[in-house]
Length: 205
Image (cartoon, rainbow, N blue to C red; front, side, top):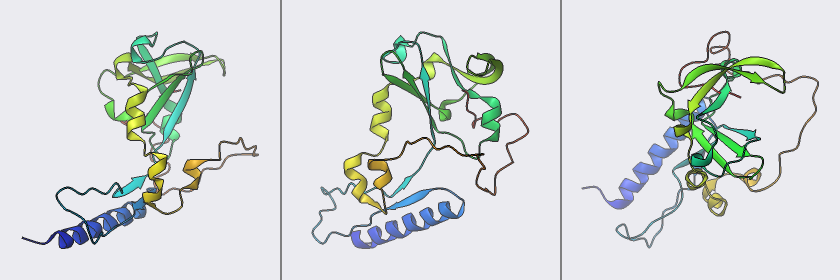
């Protein structure tokens, strides 16, 4: 049987390799800090540091209807994203947040729950004044805000991420005016463009 310190070192090595592998695959992943405590009980001790932390996409949509939780969402279905936009994205958003303008409350869903109940539909975009093809999910896909809060890494533990984390604590959010947005070059860019958004990686607006 190998010692605890040997197992810990092996685990840290595997974590480093995985993070570097993901970075080579163009994924934004950071290391968790690696601690080796001299006085640590392997049976009762616990260290909060994560093995790794990753940046995932979150799409936020404001809704004019009033709701405070999934049950009070006033419609049987929810628009996830517009299919054209999803097909052009260089990444897949993991989470979609729906904020109620009247109440300030939010609910959310994850693209990982997509199944045969999620349908393609046509919706009228009031802002752009034309119809758009959208991905639509059943109301049952919505989740309570508390579930998302428990999944997002807390601010008071950011010191356990190995690297700069200031942007997660404060700042940002300003609107920038540019002549034209040009997406960064991505080795996978273009694979999804020009066709229907792939099943399991679509957004609807």
